[in-house]
Image (cartoon, rainbow, N blue to C red; front, top):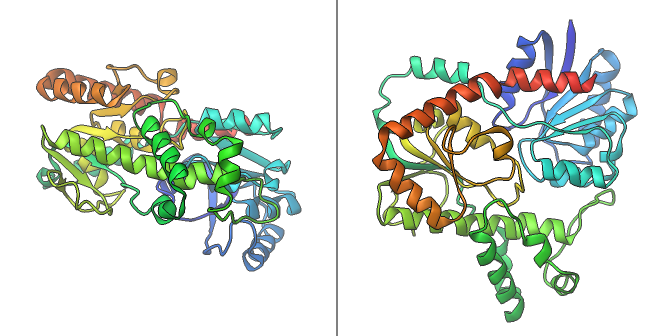
Length: 386
């Protein structure tokens, strides 16, 4: 039997991938240990070496990329396969990304092209997926779904714990003003990311005095990448999400499911947090409109939430992403908006047109059920390996 070794961690789609590999005829052995560091943890590295030396595996698989695992596989001559569910992966900006045992699959095509431009081989584009059979079983075996009924709902973080808030008032006034203007400009741009262009060499040189860059000696990341992703990217997501929810709640019944602080969302119904496996699909299925607001760090790709909404048979309104027209049709499988005013108008329209809204939700579900399954994606992945 074919056998793979998988590193188990708290990725949302880990179990779906694991069970699909088993369905495809693989024996899956899991290894789990909290990593002290993504690229240096000698105790964990030694554990992996012993496993690889004593058992024959077809390849090592992880959700997202781990430099330490890539380096151990390179040392042991074992194929290392990973598939991203986050973007960009800071861990990939590392010398190990050039290891010839790597087979890296990213859901964001812009990121694939970036790494190809850096000279990285064996990197591929693979969109994300959904298991509609699992969701259908959940719905058929869950009573009392009434508590998940909403007009408009959003499930996700508000990113209020971002590093920009911690450092904002250490910056001189002109830098603070520059970043505020950048974030305001980016906030209502959908499918376009201007942050990189706004972080000019002059701005980055000045920023070095206020932002401490921590990285290992093998890291390829720089101030532009770290600041744009972990600082500005998260802060822009917070601004986008709060402003949209506040504006929508002035005219409609809006619910949020989150662990974030919602004290300023006075008119929004706070529903607490929901479990990804058992509860979140029930929200998507039973909400008239499900919002997706993609964090700007995902430059062109389609985030997992969109597949989760469609796979649950939910109606999805999302911000425009450049890859959406590559796979879906607007106003057939879902609805996308180009700015906040466009969003508000479309929300108004689809709340009043039940038949049209339900038809789009049904067509979106049927499309992902056939074209976006984990079985299809992993078969594509395996064929690219060969």
